[in-house]
Amino acid sequence: MNRRKMLYLISTLVVVVLFVSGWRITARSAYESAAYDVVKSDGDFEVREYPDLKLAMTSSEFDAQGKDGSFMRLFRYIDGANQGAQKVAMTTPVFMEPEHDQVAGQMAFVLPQKYDSQTVPQPVSEAVQIQERKGGRFAVIRFSGRLNQETVKNAEAKLRDWASGAGLVCRNEVEYAGYDPPWTPGPFRRNEVLIRLKDET
Image (cartoon, rainbow, N blue to C red; front, side, top):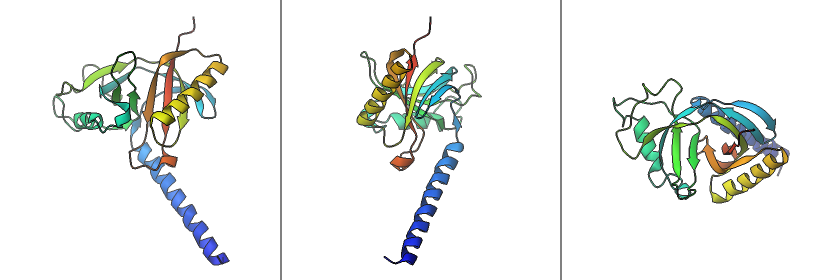
């Protein structure tokens, strides 16, 4: 391959990477994101303090990746399937909880901060509930790629190992969070595993 072709390929690759990166950042910045404060940061690991969050939640099988209808139930809710037929802005991330202790798995959209218990639109479907996610301190790991059983289990193991080394005490329950639409390429995706920390007493 001659020098000109090599330079052309390199230039094209740089443009593509910059375009995808810019599109990804712009796409995320278009949505309100769940607020939190970073208490500690260590590479891909963080300790965060979350406030109480209001969620629109429905039952979900994590392995189904929303193909069980869970994502569309929530999407219909924010698209107007609620009392008053209000449009509710999409936010990030989408929270997911796997099945545990005979409790069904859940998928949840974070509701915009402007809503409180009096103003939040109530779902017309009994399959969608408005619930509050209690605030608190969480250990978090961020990673790219696809969200599946293998990637989240690997991330959870790394997170628990890091938390233990940092002297943090984790609860058993775990949450997953996805920030990007399904068509986002794996290397550009933002995924997280979150574990609530036990109160220090």
